[in-house]
Length: 392
Figure 1 (cartoon, rainbow, N blue to C red):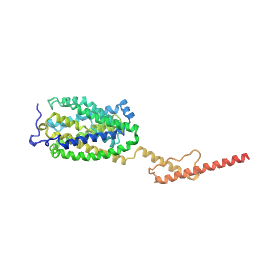
Figure 2: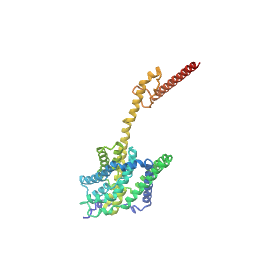
Figure 3: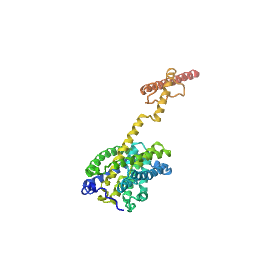
């Protein structure tokens, strides 16, 4: 059964020499360089001992792989049925759902204060398992949608290249943190500046390269599908982690890894499998998915950051309790001095229930220390006078 040409009414054609123009090559080079910078910076936040611990106790890793290759392909297949997409549309969404996790999940995990060691391990393992899982999943879910041999279209070279681009800079970053930690701060700051500059360049080149062609893929059904897929991945990834009682950091990491897909591999498969006159504007569906997963990821990060500011952490609560306990003992201590063996409680900057600020607590602690030193001095002087009288 041949796939229907759904783009004939639109007279859709790709821009001339698409993929071979200087701007296309410049965009590819910048993307590779950006990926290297991101992975190097993230590697500087990792520790080999913690990475090893995730392999020895792979609970989080197993849950992440189940979410990646269980939730996302099934979600893509279900959305295709719910919105009654035609074969080509359903196949483009399915290829995106069967792709491994993308490197954008690592950046999101860092912003969500997740477990970066687990994040990089998950990205590496999901990309490695894609060598076998992508052909298998495409073979299972594409039955009745595509009669060709889709599993042979998996870009194995592209998957291996993705592994190399992740592992090499991360390894360098881990080595620098272990052996040259004094350079890590500069690498992180420099990497952040370069990332921002390259992001602006990538946005500009993408607009120049794609132009108005992407508007052909912005149909109501495809917009709904591309917006729901990453959101369902984020949500179900977190719920699955919570059900298996992973901690908050690991749950947020699994959530980000599940919702973010490697759209570059998806684009490669669609480009290799179908000519432009057959797939038409669906060639740009991975780009549409990337826009939504980026926007929804930033939205979730903003919610998480606001939640952190509103709800005080447990450490801050302990600091407040310590400050309150200090205030209770302060009046007696100031009046009578401190007894032998007593020490001043640590002062904190957290506001106390009675309204004393950190400056007043610091003064009180200083007064306590001075009273204690004065008492000790008097005791030493009395003991020295007593000993001299005894000798006389």
